[in-house]
Image (tube, rainbow, N blue to C red; front, side):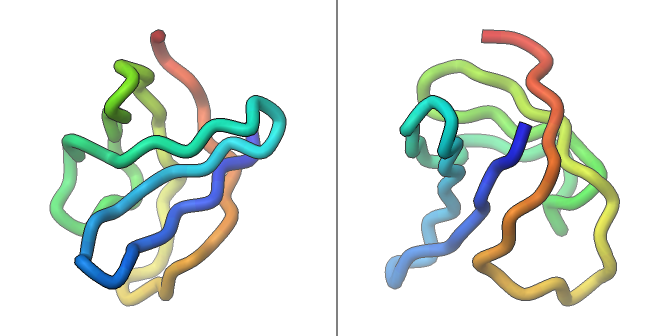
Length: 69
């Protein structure tokens, strides 16, 4: 599914899923650089993010895989 990842002015990461019109903060991430690991959203969804180059700028839209609700 397409997911837009962004960071707000306070430095909080969030994910927006256009098909669901859902925007949730990212509450935990498996890898410190975010890419290629799992992230957990505030609503409990877990998403597997693709590998990306170090220093990838935000906001960015990626193809993520939903692992659980």
